[in-house]
Length: 381
Image 1: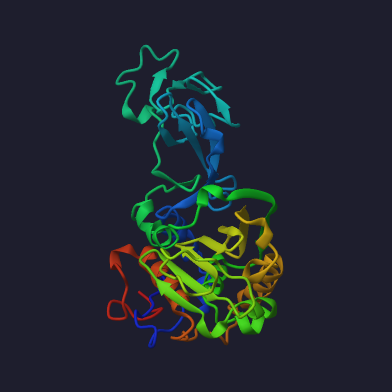
Image 2 (image 1 turned 180 degrees about the horizontal axis):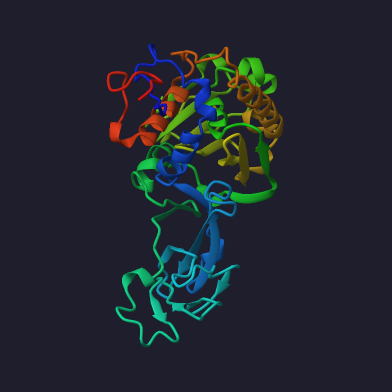
């Protein structure tokens, strides 16, 4: 029998996902196609394809969709339209473009099949006798694509539009001059964690642990006012600043005007974390590598350098080390035969409950938004 997991919609009654969920090979296999392929994934900066005739290869979810990821190609045609295409030749599967470049066409280096910058096959030698050729299958598949603030996002089979995933964040922070945020590679780095990716995400989604794990961060934020707001595919943790600590200078047009906000912690399902501080943005991308290994990318975009080392946005590396230690300890603990599952704090763990509900909804789409009435929590079928 295969376990099928569900979480009660009522956080005051619900139990957490059981420990075995994080070691379930069936869940791991389902997650790629049902969670990550159906959500929007960050591709990075679009600087390499800013001009007409530009091509730039990129890999979607390296480590999850194969060691190198799903090979994609950003292509801006002569009219300026930007598309996301497959970077695999439709003849024999050769990779087409290996480095960013300018070109009039896309040419395969194996047998010289050629495509225009919209992905349509235009030439193939030695195929004169081939019947029913070419067909639509000979063109490069086009992948759903979107952009926001100079960054690209793609989805193999999106459950909803990029706008539906990002809209609450875009609306709430519409006053931020994102065009002034500058990528800073010296403050960007990657972390490798020996834990299931979902454990890392659920730890991020609750401030419950801040007083007990993050002594430094706890001095910068007011834990008593820390709160979460839930949206369809995203949620927000609002951290107010303690007296004397760094806070945003909010304009009157902000819905939070009059409140001393230290940080906006936005999470977008399933693996994107947009941490906005008075100095700018720390974008965290959670990339599953194996059922028990995760890579987290930290990418910094600086707006005001004078505020870099103060408030909730200071000492991010130290906070990350503290989080990793806890998450790796939980990974070990979930193997215990004496642990099954816990309960959610209705006051502090709404975000984690929201994440678990979305996970089970995506993992078992035939059941829609799963409820306790439709399936027993963590029951067998």
